[in-house]
Image (cartoon, rainbow, N blue to C red; front, side, top):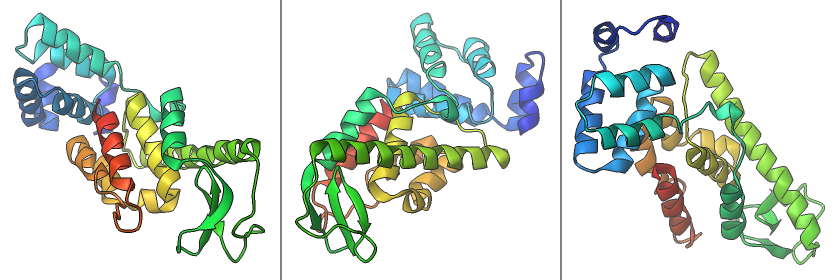
Length: 239
């Protein structure tokens, strides 16, 4: 489908036919008419996986029978999606991670063969130089947070780079990027990339991917607060 990006002119009927976009456009119109704004926004994300921003804007302008206000809202959403390789974690994204990881200056164990301290920094017990009860300063904890978030963000961007090499071009909003980095930080880049949530995102199914956030790696018996965190990430992803 990459050939669609090379069009130098707008040909509405040809693009709709070649890419079978009419069902997606109908869903978008119905979502907007029904005031299901979160669904409409996710459908816009799916459209941007196969079209450029300008082409998607043209569809909204010429192919959807909407009033002026609804068109204006849709346009603002379209231009709110970006190449994830151009994004950085926002201040809100940082605060989300900090607040949910919670600062622990003394090292502890959760029974997962790792020792944890700071803002959720974890290392294998066998190879870590730290032991349970070892205390670090708040400055050291913040430094570890920066380093770990950088690892998570780098892993997320590497994933998108690899998808691009496969011809899969995904656009995301700033909020969605923040959620991706937060989840990668929380469960580890490797585990994050092997979730059903990521598989649906790769398939350009933003709506199903969003729903899966709420249950991704949630274990209420072992980590009782994780379902609350995931619900906040879900709301942030669709907002």
